Image (cartoon, rainbow, N blue to C red; front, top):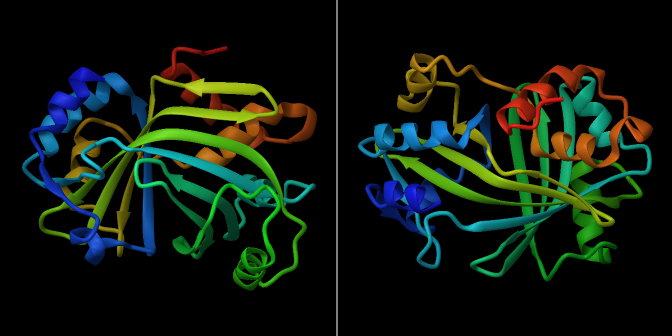
Length: 252
């Protein structure tokens, strides 16, 4: 991590307030997966094109999430089956800021639309006002239960010239009922854009390094790792999971 921190110091900082113009709550997401060793090679190539989000004096803040699903794992199944109209529900804590948000992410026609409200803590049983918000966004009355705890660190880069952000998630941990699964050598990168632009500095860098877009969310990865084949069918994800485990030096 010391090497990563040294590389991050080369970036110009940007604050949360300055980043208001690139919140991108409705956006196109493009994901990539690679090992931590690749991140150390990428960062110096990005410093001239992006600024780095700095929160409470850190360039790699911690995040914690609690994901919800129903007892049939409907959200997971919609992802696995490639449903074009699907949702994720979570509470996310921004650790350094000690802020909690209840978030609903809606994937529709290739775009991601995120809505959120402030909440007070990790409520495993959602209070009435939070539940009303979720049901309104889902346009459905679902009996949601907590399914996965997730934590990670995140580097956020903001383009100097375009409306786009890149996030790099690492030190990824999933947990539920004492079962822990760690991906400490895996980086999940996500390019967030108003509209897909393959001329992006980051997209072109990924292309030049032969790193192709890779579709698999932390929510799905964690669900598979925690619950396995006893509770979930994930045939379509097996090849992807094997690849991610290989990156994490945990191939089976």
